[in-house]
Length: 346
Image (cartoon, rainbow, N blue to C red):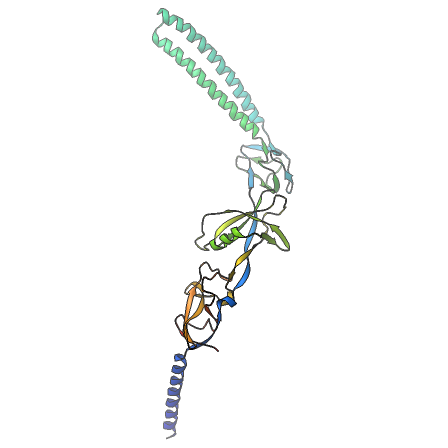
């Protein structure tokens, strides 16, 4: 008898819980709302940025030779065409002498070919030599002329090699790394120095297309590194959008009077005239960032609707193209579903 009573009690309890849950689930979710115009904020935009040098080149050897003298050290600021390294150039000097001698021989052969051609021109008119011999004399002169051009090219190549025995700075900058040692045998392509152009610095950053448009309209743009601020100016926008981040690279120039280190990390900051939706109202639904609003409100009851925001970036205030009187849900906005019936809290 006690077992039957206990069983009936359990059945009644389960029925009560089911009825209670059904009624709770069927009830509209209570939310709070606020007009869009009351929560929009003015923002100062910022984005990560880095300082880069427009020229940061590895200076390499172009010929084979042994390093005799090194004229620059790490940290030294060098001028354009300043000597950096001199290589043993004796083999190239000897090759130049051989080329000069070969040119003299070629010129002598040309003189002989010219004299033979002049003599055979007289003889061919008299008919004392066959035409074949005259043609061969003409060909010898043309061959001698071509040989002289070859010898001149060899001399130019030798002069170029001799000039490359001295490695010079292609531009003014600072030596940031030295890879060459005195007495080291180097071949063409061996790295010798890392040279950074210290007076040609730019700032690079990645922004959304919407931010780039505002960046171009702003009157105040700065690069901030720690407590230091530098005035900057938009120089160029790279017309390629990264498919993963949906951003574009921008390049900013600094005043010529500013001295700044390459590789310095910081942020670019600029004023935004437009007002944006604060981050606490932005949520992600089905891979999209957006805001939950209340619509079709009649006597305190309405429908929740999720509105995706174009160009929204995670963790940043976003632009919103909705009327100023739009009812933004500001309470329980993360608990309700798109299209769910809601009860407006008084």
